[in-house]
Image (tube, rainbow, N blue to C red):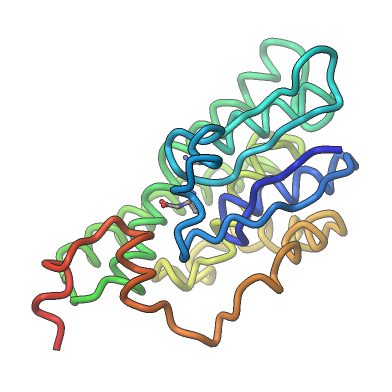
Length: 233
Ligand SMILES: N[C@@H](CCC(=O)N[C@@H](CS)C(=O)NCC(=O)O)C(=O)O
Protein backbone atom coordinates (compact mmCIF):
# COMPACT_ATOMS: atom_id res chain seq x y z
CA UNK A 1 0.00 0.00 0.00
CA UNK A 2 1.36 3.43 -1.01
CA UNK A 3 0.42 6.53 0.98
CA UNK A 4 -0.17 9.40 -1.45
CA UNK A 5 -0.10 12.87 0.09
CA UNK A 6 -2.31 14.64 -2.35
CA UNK A 7 -4.49 17.54 -3.37
CA UNK A 8 -6.40 17.45 -6.69
CA UNK A 9 -4.15 19.68 -8.81
CA UNK A 10 -2.08 19.02 -11.93
CA UNK A 11 0.94 17.83 -9.95
CA UNK A 12 -1.12 15.65 -7.64
CA UNK A 13 -2.96 14.02 -10.51
CA UNK A 14 0.23 12.94 -12.23
CA UNK A 15 0.65 10.50 -9.37
CA UNK A 16 -2.94 9.33 -8.95
CA UNK A 17 -2.97 8.62 -12.72
CA UNK A 18 0.35 6.78 -12.52
CA UNK A 19 -0.81 4.65 -9.59
CA UNK A 20 -3.95 3.74 -11.51
CA UNK A 21 -1.89 2.90 -14.62
CA UNK A 22 0.51 0.58 -12.84
CA UNK A 23 -2.17 -0.93 -10.60
CA UNK A 24 -0.53 -0.36 -7.22
CA UNK A 25 -2.81 -0.07 -4.20
CA UNK A 26 -2.78 3.39 -2.64
CA UNK A 27 -4.63 5.56 -0.20
CA UNK A 28 -4.99 9.30 -0.48
CA UNK A 29 -3.94 11.44 2.46
CA UNK A 30 -5.33 14.91 1.74
CA UNK A 31 -2.96 17.89 2.05
CA UNK A 32 -5.23 20.94 1.89
CA UNK A 33 -2.81 23.45 0.37
CA UNK A 34 -5.39 26.25 0.60
CA UNK A 35 -5.63 25.79 4.36
CA UNK A 36 -1.91 25.44 5.10
CA UNK A 37 -1.53 21.67 5.67
CA UNK A 38 1.74 21.87 3.69
CA UNK A 39 3.34 23.90 6.50
CA UNK A 40 2.73 21.49 9.37
CA UNK A 41 5.93 20.09 10.92
CA UNK A 42 4.74 16.54 10.08
CA UNK A 43 4.39 17.38 6.41
CA UNK A 44 7.61 19.42 6.21
CA UNK A 45 9.43 16.39 7.60
CA UNK A 46 8.57 14.46 4.41
CA UNK A 47 8.39 17.42 2.00
CA UNK A 48 10.96 20.11 2.81
CA UNK A 49 9.78 22.28 -0.12
CA UNK A 50 6.24 22.39 1.38
CA UNK A 51 4.57 21.01 -1.72
CA UNK A 52 2.63 17.91 -2.57
CA UNK A 53 2.65 15.25 -4.04
CA UNK A 54 4.66 12.99 -1.76
CA UNK A 55 4.55 9.21 -1.47
CA UNK A 56 5.53 6.81 1.28
CA UNK A 57 6.05 3.24 0.14
CA UNK A 58 6.07 0.79 3.04
CA UNK A 59 5.97 -2.24 0.78
CA UNK A 60 9.77 -2.39 0.53
CA UNK A 61 12.66 -4.14 2.21
CA UNK A 62 13.94 -2.08 5.14
CA UNK A 63 12.58 1.29 6.21
CA UNK A 64 9.78 2.92 4.20
CA UNK A 65 10.78 4.95 1.13
CA UNK A 66 9.56 8.57 1.11
CA UNK A 67 9.77 10.69 -2.07
CA UNK A 68 8.74 14.25 -2.91
CA UNK A 69 8.82 15.90 -6.42
CA UNK A 70 6.41 14.45 -8.94
CA UNK A 71 9.08 13.61 -11.54
CA UNK A 72 11.08 11.58 -9.01
CA UNK A 73 7.90 9.83 -7.88
CA UNK A 74 6.97 8.93 -11.47
CA UNK A 75 10.44 7.48 -12.06
CA UNK A 76 10.30 5.51 -8.80
CA UNK A 77 6.90 3.98 -9.53
CA UNK A 78 7.93 3.15 -13.11
CA UNK A 79 11.09 1.44 -11.91
CA UNK A 80 9.31 -0.35 -9.07
CA UNK A 81 6.76 -1.86 -11.46
CA UNK A 82 8.82 -2.07 -14.67
CA UNK A 83 6.11 -0.13 -16.50
CA UNK A 84 5.97 3.07 -18.60
CA UNK A 85 9.74 3.70 -18.62
CA UNK A 86 11.94 1.55 -20.87
CA UNK A 87 14.85 -0.12 -19.04
CA UNK A 88 17.46 0.40 -21.79
CA UNK A 89 19.55 3.58 -21.68
CA UNK A 90 18.35 4.97 -25.04
CA UNK A 91 14.68 4.37 -24.31
CA UNK A 92 14.90 5.53 -20.70
CA UNK A 93 16.45 8.90 -21.58
CA UNK A 94 14.13 9.39 -24.55
CA UNK A 95 11.36 9.41 -21.93
CA UNK A 96 13.18 11.19 -19.10
CA UNK A 97 14.10 14.22 -21.22
CA UNK A 98 10.36 14.86 -21.70
CA UNK A 99 9.62 14.24 -18.03
CA UNK A 100 12.25 16.84 -17.10
CA UNK A 101 10.90 19.17 -19.81
CA UNK A 102 7.51 18.99 -18.14
CA UNK A 103 8.73 19.31 -14.56
CA UNK A 104 11.16 22.15 -15.32
CA UNK A 105 9.27 23.91 -18.13
CA UNK A 106 5.63 23.25 -18.88
CA UNK A 107 4.63 22.86 -15.20
CA UNK A 108 6.25 26.04 -13.83
CA UNK A 109 5.30 28.19 -16.84
CA UNK A 110 1.71 26.95 -16.88
CA UNK A 111 1.59 27.45 -13.10
CA UNK A 112 2.60 31.09 -13.56
CA UNK A 113 -0.01 31.45 -16.31
CA UNK A 114 -2.64 30.12 -13.89
CA UNK A 115 -1.52 32.71 -11.36
CA UNK A 116 -1.46 35.76 -13.64
CA UNK A 117 -4.51 34.86 -15.75
CA UNK A 118 -6.73 33.47 -13.00
CA UNK A 119 -5.69 34.11 -9.41
CA UNK A 120 -3.55 37.29 -9.12
CA UNK A 121 -5.27 39.84 -6.86
CA UNK A 122 -4.42 42.64 -9.29
CA UNK A 123 -4.27 42.54 -13.09
CA UNK A 124 -0.72 42.51 -14.39
CA UNK A 125 -0.67 42.72 -18.20
CA UNK A 126 3.05 42.06 -18.46
CA UNK A 127 2.82 38.85 -16.41
CA UNK A 128 -0.28 37.73 -18.30
CA UNK A 129 1.36 38.24 -21.69
CA UNK A 130 4.72 36.79 -20.69
CA UNK A 131 3.33 33.51 -19.36
CA UNK A 132 0.54 33.07 -21.92
CA UNK A 133 3.17 33.44 -24.66
CA UNK A 134 5.68 31.15 -22.99
CA UNK A 135 3.04 28.45 -22.52
CA UNK A 136 2.05 28.91 -26.19
CA UNK A 137 5.68 28.31 -27.15
CA UNK A 138 5.75 25.11 -25.08
CA UNK A 139 2.48 23.88 -26.62
CA UNK A 140 4.13 24.52 -30.01
CA UNK A 141 7.05 22.31 -28.94
CA UNK A 142 4.63 19.55 -27.94
CA UNK A 143 2.63 19.96 -31.12
CA UNK A 144 5.71 19.47 -33.32
CA UNK A 145 6.82 16.42 -31.34
CA UNK A 146 3.33 14.91 -31.43
CA UNK A 147 3.17 15.53 -35.17
CA UNK A 148 6.03 13.04 -35.51
CA UNK A 149 5.19 10.59 -32.71
CA UNK A 150 1.99 9.16 -31.27
CA UNK A 151 3.09 10.01 -27.72
CA UNK A 152 5.66 12.47 -26.37
CA UNK A 153 8.50 9.97 -26.24
CA UNK A 154 7.26 7.51 -28.88
CA UNK A 155 5.28 4.95 -26.87
CA UNK A 156 2.92 5.90 -24.03
CA UNK A 157 5.08 6.60 -20.95
CA UNK A 158 5.48 8.62 -17.76
CA UNK A 159 6.26 11.63 -20.00
CA UNK A 160 2.63 11.66 -21.15
CA UNK A 161 1.40 11.18 -17.58
CA UNK A 162 3.49 14.18 -16.47
CA UNK A 163 2.18 16.50 -19.19
CA UNK A 164 -1.47 15.49 -19.51
CA UNK A 165 -2.88 16.95 -16.24
CA UNK A 166 -1.33 20.32 -17.15
CA UNK A 167 -2.70 20.34 -20.69
CA UNK A 168 -6.06 19.51 -19.08
CA UNK A 169 -6.09 23.13 -17.84
CA UNK A 170 -5.22 24.65 -21.23
CA UNK A 171 -8.07 27.17 -20.92
CA UNK A 172 -6.61 28.48 -17.62
CA UNK A 173 -3.38 29.09 -19.57
CA UNK A 174 -5.06 31.08 -22.34
CA UNK A 175 -4.56 28.28 -24.89
CA UNK A 176 -6.98 26.93 -27.50
CA UNK A 177 -6.33 23.33 -28.59
CA UNK A 178 -7.65 24.23 -32.07
CA UNK A 179 -4.25 25.92 -32.52
CA UNK A 180 -2.44 22.65 -31.70
CA UNK A 181 -4.12 19.78 -33.60
CA UNK A 182 -1.51 17.18 -32.64
CA UNK A 183 -1.77 18.12 -28.97
CA UNK A 184 -5.55 17.84 -29.22
CA UNK A 185 -5.32 14.35 -30.80
CA UNK A 186 -2.92 13.22 -28.05
CA UNK A 187 -4.87 14.91 -25.24
CA UNK A 188 -8.08 13.17 -26.25
CA UNK A 189 -6.40 9.76 -26.74
CA UNK A 190 -4.68 9.88 -23.33
CA UNK A 191 -7.88 11.14 -21.68
CA UNK A 192 -9.80 8.09 -22.96
CA UNK A 193 -7.56 5.66 -21.09
CA UNK A 194 -9.57 4.14 -18.20
CA UNK A 195 -6.67 4.55 -15.75
CA UNK A 196 -6.36 8.22 -16.69
CA UNK A 197 -10.09 8.71 -16.19
CA UNK A 198 -9.87 7.11 -12.74
CA UNK A 199 -6.69 8.96 -11.72
CA UNK A 200 -8.06 12.31 -12.92
CA UNK A 201 -11.23 11.79 -10.88
CA UNK A 202 -9.28 10.98 -7.70
CA UNK A 203 -9.91 13.36 -4.83
CA UNK A 204 -12.27 15.57 -6.83
CA UNK A 205 -14.63 15.56 -3.86
CA UNK A 206 -11.98 17.35 -1.79
CA UNK A 207 -12.57 20.72 -3.47
CA UNK A 208 -15.60 22.73 -4.39
CA UNK A 209 -14.56 24.56 -7.57
CA UNK A 210 -17.70 26.69 -7.53
CA UNK A 211 -16.27 28.53 -4.51
CA UNK A 212 -13.71 31.25 -5.28
CA UNK A 213 -10.37 31.07 -3.47
CA UNK A 214 -10.31 33.52 -0.54
CA UNK A 215 -7.59 36.15 -0.11
CA UNK A 216 -6.25 34.20 2.87
CA UNK A 217 -5.97 31.05 0.74
CA UNK A 218 -4.22 33.02 -2.02
CA UNK A 219 -1.73 34.44 0.50
CA UNK A 220 -0.84 30.96 1.68
CA UNK A 221 -0.71 29.27 -1.67
CA UNK A 222 1.06 31.95 -3.69
CA UNK A 223 3.33 33.20 -0.93
CA UNK A 224 1.85 36.70 -1.09
CA UNK A 225 1.87 39.47 1.48
CA UNK A 226 -0.48 42.43 1.97
CA UNK A 227 1.27 44.47 -0.75
CA UNK A 228 -0.12 42.08 -3.38
CA UNK A 229 -3.61 43.15 -2.37
CA UNK A 230 -2.86 46.84 -1.83
CA UNK A 231 -4.05 48.13 -5.21
CA UNK A 232 -7.00 45.76 -5.46
CA UNK A 233 -10.19 47.69 -6.15
N1 LIG B 1 8.04 20.60 -8.56
C1 LIG B 1 6.98 20.09 -7.72
C2 LIG B 1 5.83 21.07 -7.71
C3 LIG B 1 4.71 20.63 -6.81
C4 LIG B 1 3.73 21.77 -6.58
O1 LIG B 1 3.92 22.88 -7.10
N2 LIG B 1 2.69 21.48 -5.80
C5 LIG B 1 1.76 22.52 -5.46
C6 LIG B 1 0.35 22.20 -5.92
S1 LIG B 1 0.26 21.88 -7.67
C7 LIG B 1 1.73 22.71 -3.96
O2 LIG B 1 1.81 21.75 -3.21
N3 LIG B 1 1.66 23.98 -3.51
C8 LIG B 1 1.61 24.31 -2.14
C9 LIG B 1 2.43 25.54 -1.84
O3 LIG B 1 3.13 26.04 -2.75
O4 LIG B 1 2.40 26.02 -0.72
C10 LIG B 1 6.52 18.72 -8.23
O5 LIG B 1 6.59 18.52 -9.45
O6 LIG B 1 6.13 17.87 -7.42
